[in-house]
Image 1: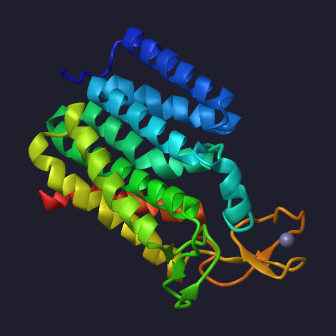
Image 2 (image 1 turned 30 degrees about the vertical axis):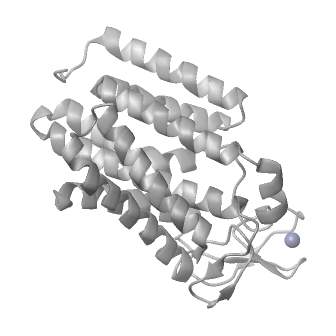
Length: 269
Ligand SMILES: [Zn+2]
């Protein structure tokens, strides 16, 4: 498909309605919050305007990430509800952190067709990195063991940022390869980019883990005497800053993960 700018108003309306329909479905299913549904509609609309492979890849990615987040949600609440910053319904900040770079790449492909190939590589690298990171966390949290903190060099509660487990790391590698493969199957990137996009996904997810271990903002619940990422702990108490860089919230770290994924995919080839 030849991207044309300005895309016809009709295409834009159809793309927005399609993306909005999917977002509302995800909202009803509990995968998106209302603000997340608005953000997802925007990301989805520009993706669909950039071309069918963009839209199909985004929807496929979202289904995989949502299913992973829903699997064993109850068990995860028991295991990680104390630690993780947010619940399963993604809000606008989370959608932006995961899909912002992808959306920017879609706009670049639309307005600058000569750069569409590089934009598609960046988009694939960004989403594969975000997906690999998400699935590593989900699989690692589902696993019944306690992950290992790189910073503290000890075992910590499941869901702690910067902690790794064998199950989570294996899940990350499989997710990176699987999602990169999906990007080639839908035609977003050529088959010979499979390796570069997989490496990009692994690099992005690894960046997320390393920043999460040393620099991500940590908070402390004074009522429970526990470390958490929640601003208001699930016990109801307001938490206090407790190390790390205050600006590096979980969302900021996720966004950095996608930036690294995009950059590696473009420059690896
Ligand atoms: Zn508490």
